[in-house]
Every structure is written in C-alpha cells, then in structure tokens.
Amino acid sequence: MRDLYEGLVAENAEGELIPGAAANWTASENGLRYEIEIRANAKWSDGSPLTAADFVTSWRRVVDPANHSPVADVLRPIQNASEIISGKLPPTQLGVSARGSNFLIVDLRRPAPYFPQVLAHSAAYPSKSGLTRNGTNTFQLSNGPFKVVSWTPGGSIVLEKNLAYWNSGSVYFNQVRYIPFSDEDSEFRAYRAGNLDITSNIPINALPLINKTLRSELHVNPYLGTFYLGFNLRSGPLSQSRQLRKALTICIDRNTLQRSLLPFGQEAAFRFVPPGTWNYRGHDWAWRQQPREPLRTEARTIYASSGFSTNHPLELRLLINTNPALKRIALAIASMWYECLGVSAKITEEEYRVFLDTRKAPAKWDVLRLGWTADFNDASNFLNTFRSDSQNNDTGYSNTAFDRLMDQADNESDLHRRAELLEQAEQSMLSDYPVSPIYFYSSKRLARSSLRGVGANPLDRVYSRQLSRVSR
Image (tube, rainbow, N blue to C red; front, side, top):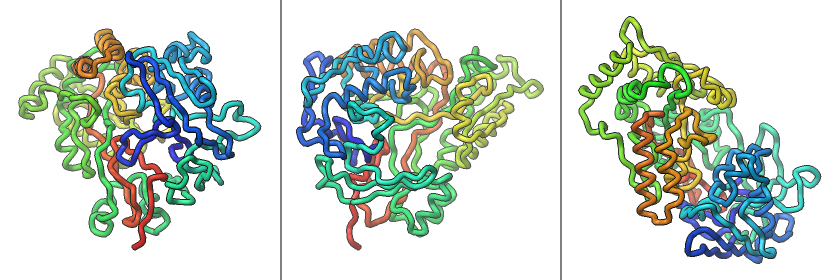
C-alpha cells in the first residue's frame, strides 16, 4: 500500500517525517487542532485532483465499526474516534472536516505530539471521495508514486509509475513487481536464482551460505518491534498467579537464546518498549542484573509454593504459528522451563490464519507467541495494547492503575512529564507479568548491490519510490 498511496505526511528512507500529500501543516498552541494544506498539484492516478474530502471519506470509513478495520485504533487521537469505534457515535461525528478543496481541519480529543506520524500511517491514507468499492474500482486509483496494472490472485502484483503523482520525477523505477512466497526458503531460492532484487526476510538456516557468498548484499538493522509471550489471564493455571508468571519469565535465559538462536542482531528484551523509541527511556526488570543461579532458586521457591513439584508438574499449552524459527525458539523455552522448574509445556503449531483465530479463544491456550511492531514511533503505540479495552489485548490484562497512567499520559502536553507517565505505566504493567518479552526485532533482508535506498529504518519500511539502481 505504501507504494500506491501517500498520506499527508511521508517518510524518508531513514524514517524521518517529510511532507507528503500535504504542502504544510500547523498545530494550534494547545495541540488540539491541525490545519493541513493539501498540495495544489496532488492528483489521483486518473488525473483528478486530490481533495480534503478524500481524507474525510477515508478516515470515516476506517473508524466505522461496520468495516472492522484492523487499523482503526491508530486514529483514536482524533476527536470522537473512540466513541465511533465503540458504536456510540456515527462516523460523521469524527473530528475531521474539509475547508474548501485544499484544507483539512483535524480536531484531537487530547494532545498527541506524535500525531504527524499518524498522518503517515496507512490508516490515514485517502480514498477517492464519491466513489464506492462497487462500480468504479477504487483499488485501481492511487495517489502515490505507483499504480496497479495487474494483480493475479495468489500470484504477482505489478505496479507501474504513476505519472500523475506530484513528485513522479523523483521516482526511478518505471515498474515494480511483488511476488508472494509461501515461506522464507522459497523466497531465498528465488533471490539466488536472480528472480528478485530484494527480499522481505531471510531463513535462518541460510545464514552460513549468505555470510560466505552474499555478505555484501545482507542488510540487518534493529527496528521498533518486540517478540514476546503472552500469558492467559482469563482462565487456566497462570491467570491468578503473578508470582508464577514471574517464575516462568525468570527461567527464560534470553542471553542464551540470543547467542544460539538469534543470529541477526536481535537484542534480548527485559522490558516491552524497544530501545530507540522516540522521547522514551525504558527500564528493565530490576532482576536483570542479578546472577542467574539465585534467580533460578527464587523461581523454584515460587514454583513449589504454588503447589507444583516433580510429581505434580505445571502443564502448559504453548500456542505458536507454524514457522521453523519460531518452533526452535518455542522448543528452547519449553526446555528451559522443564530444566529450571519441571514444567511440562506442550507446543501447538497452527497455520497463521488459524492461529489468528485461536489466539482470540483463550480456552485453547495458556501461553501465546505474540509480537508487536510499531505503527508509529511512540511508546504509547506499544503500551496501548495493554489497556483493558484494547482490541489487541490478547492476554486479558486489566489494571486500573495502568489505565489511569495511560490516560494521564494521553492528556499531558509536556513531553518530559508525558514520558515519565508512560515509563511508570510500563513499570506497572511489567510488575504484573502479563507477558514475557523475549527479544527486540531486527530487520533482515537481501538486496542487490546495485540497488540504492535500502537503509536502516526504525519502522522497517522500504519504499520503492526511494530505490534506484546504479550501473556496475
């Protein structure tokens, strides 16, 4: 979508914000109103002008609960968005309006210093006003640097340069082709065969070969994402015992996992919000610096006091999606739990689409493999997943003190004080052990040495409009 559409705000290759479809924008002194001027030369791929009404139409559609948009939460800072998402108000009450064809007025329900980042998110992309998804196919209209020329179900998607794009002169490639793959190994084979210029991932078992023959084409960079285990707090043996969840968390030797199973620069995680998050200084669990053996002794004491022993072990159901690398990590963690405490963990693998359904059925699991990657660079995007009413709160965590701190941070305009409140909220959550963070993500891909524009990006985004090729 990032090749087809452009938000009011865009990003450069390093993830820094730059004007997109907006020529400029201003925020009121209290941070509650944004006035955004749309470029006079911004157009749709059919040559018609991009207007403020196109954004009003799209944003109302995103927050409309009838559409079940998975990115509706991103627009919650806008006035009345939360009430619309919950069905209490109609989408027409969203705090966004057009003033003429080129000015968009956005009213926020609270100060959101990260709001320009929201304007770069896909949730804030425009949709052609006056068209429906029936009749004229809106998916064939784009306002970004490329447009769709062919789309084969289950096959490739071919894009070509959108000559109506306001900045088309800066776009190097005339055509881009996306090819789906069933697994990372298939993608790697296609790259080696010369059928791809860039991959989205790399299979871990290919690393020795890559280091030997393709090292100069390997790109590995940290980005804002956390791999973690979620504990079932709605039912089962972990739901009522914070101490037992702590024992399980302590017994996971993250440094060993990092050395043996995480060769792409992933960093061991002892908190939830990743390092490098804007205006945020996270704090690890205090026990991180303690020697391992006294920690293991503490975990065993907790385990025994919870009524479990060698003759009566804790039995857990660990749910993951099918993936060889995930399976290795799950097996290693299950082994650590068994060796440290005597826990018997049964691992269940499911195809990803089935996994997505099962993770919403907590009666079927006790521990769940989860991951969160930033929609925008702000700690609240990570911590909001633990709000009692969050659609992304798979564990069922609910803590009024945590919710209160998040609300206070939401309404705090002073950046230093806001960061303090978010840090307190994370510490409050971590002390309850609803999840066990394992590691922070890193991006890993191969790209031809002739390709330029593949850089480090905190949100792991590669835009085709920023890529070019140099002659060998």
